[in-house]
Figure (cartoon, protein in one colour):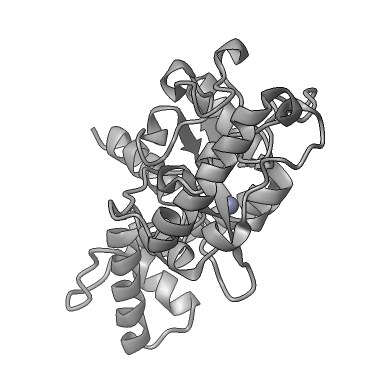
Amino acid sequence: MIRIAKSPAVPAPLGTRGARHLKKLQETQEADPAACRVADNKLLESRDGIYNDNRVKERLRADQHDKCCYCESYFSSTSYGDVEHFRPKGGYRQDAADALHKPGYYWLAYNWHNLYFACQLCNQRFKGNYFPLRNPADRAQSHADFLSDEQPLLPDPATEDPAAHLSFVDDAAQALDERGAGCIWVFGLDRPELIKRRAERLKSIKQARLLAGLDMSRPLAPAIAGFFRELKLSYADAVEMVAEAQRIWDTAALDSAEFAGMARAYFRRVAQQSQ
Ligand SMILES: [Zn+2]
């Protein structure tokens, strides 16, 4: 999870159809607030056709460099993403022992600042309706309440830097405080299949560290020459491998790189060790 720079312009369907439906939702809530709090009621259901509009999805995917806002996995043709409501629109839970409370943050269903793009695992299997607060009594219950009274246990990646709360030790997510711990359990950042993919990425970054910067026009150190011989690489292939290592090393911590948060933590450790 890294900071995300979202486009300032609100995608068209949110400001037009979204704004019109929001007015209806607010009128429904004001007409009978108690009915909207009843379990399983569907009075404040949002219209997924509005926030799932392609213009919203494409803007989010571009802003997030085709990565999940939480686990930083790249989307691919086999892993579709979902438009994710940071504050859940339909109902919320404080923790695993909590029942689903109605209503959710219905007034943020079409709010650009509340929308991200998440992989299906982070969104559906893990985050779901969780939105834990430091003090649940501060929770906003309707569009008349102030969100600024809440102290969420999850950092909002567009307005806060998750790295202040969440780091990595090699491929393992590490909580720096209770908000980092919140990220790990709510988003499932320590799930085995994700750790395995981060481990593969870290392996290629560590290999890049050894090869990047090699001057292939000069005689190589015996260990490096032995490494290339073991791989049975031609000189031309070895030059190509070194160029690829340089590319991986130079780009691993960019916003656009998969698992950039982990790479940044690794780079910080390498820098500390070399001091
Ligand atoms: Zn994810």
